[in-house]
Length: 347
Image (cartoon, rainbow, N blue to C red; front, side, top):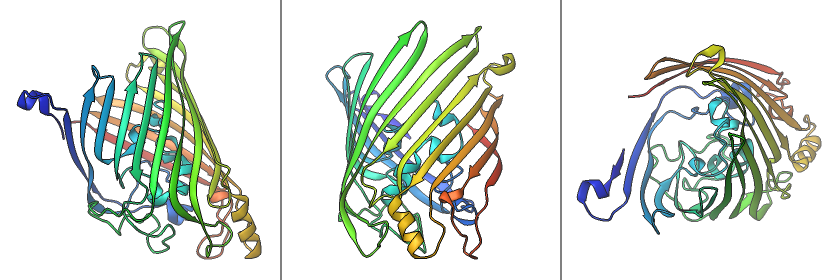
């Protein structure tokens, strides 16, 4: 619930938001799929939890926006607007921070105390910065009984400030050329916390970081309603000793208004996440298959049945889940196909 305090009180105040989630359903990406990242961007453990709680105030003629509270930083950083059309979580929140940061990073459903600044220099340039707690749940980085650490804080109200601080920075550039709009982003994050060594869990390393680049681009207009868009995103870190995923990339195309149907959208996306060579060394010492690169593919179609009801049939393929691992029965996990149907009701 977002409230405009200026409209409500007549005072020069900003906006206030409080929201919650009621999550039901059995997570399936860890078991039986054994994938690096969730195959659904709404997959989570069963809980009813506080989601976001924040206050936002704008200054300098609304060019500077200051936001403070319990935030989902996935709304602001590392986002591809074209990628958000897909259901695999890797296309919304990348596979690299999802595996390399505490609690899968500061995104739904585990948000974090943070401050966020956005400065709009011009219609073309935006600058973003955020400082946050890197582990609001306060759990260990590796938790075999609760891999996502969500059940350690089922209500979303526990905050721990003992691990470290997480900083994000991003530069955004928007440009329209020949009637085709593009948005380009360059950013990175830095974490002051401690992270387990990928080849020896008894060892820890201080700090962590990664950089990323994103491009969203309209490629072509076909008539009045049909439009072809594309995105590409890459993530990389040199800290291969403390990160499960050391580089990742994803890309895709979406076609708005296919078959002359305004509101429909067809999309095809693909991506990969490469495991750390230190993790592969640990697997080799344990006589396990050495983890390598996981690949994911997705074909999706959005159908607005009514202005408030949307259906999205979806097909995904996972090649070499988690880079090649054994399941809990000691058997090799084969390539996978996932068929889904997502619906969205707006009211």
